[in-house]
Image 1 (cartoon, rainbow, N blue to C red):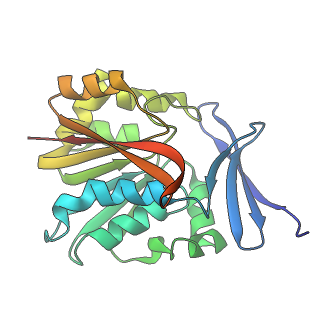
Image 2 (spheres, one colour):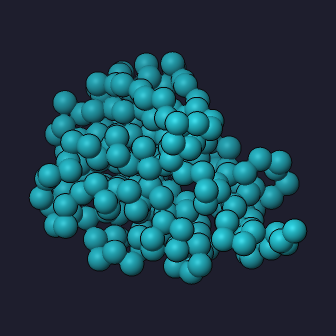
Length: 225
């Protein structure tokens, strides 16, 4: 039986704990230290791809489109967003933890096809909430996969994004007809109400962790008029 190797760790800011990067043969896993469950696995990423496909569907043919990805993870959302937009477009990825970026520049990046090496990719290190607070209406799509969904588990500061103030800031960052897509571990009726109060037209889609099977996740789709 092949050994499970611990490759690296990274401290999550704001007392969020510690991330652990593990490898078993060609499979990578990211866990929260001390927790039983797995945050990310390099063989289970369909819902991350669906987040990007659904969030970018309206700009597949648009020249000079601008996309913001909140959370790099294992790179699957970023890679799919790049595949969904034109060659003249730009995809900005905001990542809180510098080590996660470095992992994706190394062996982990092979899993998603090294999307950080795409010339259309821009990396912004830091809290996406800080970026949102300072940003003008420059994005056609914002794809959020910064945590477990509207209720953060690895970084409580992420919860601001889902408050009325956070949703209003996200709304203001989108161009007219822009789309906010939010990955969630499960449904959340209250979050849908909050999105509507912020002026979005809202829909939600059930997606699977693996194509046609696996855990059921939810992508909230919130469109700016």
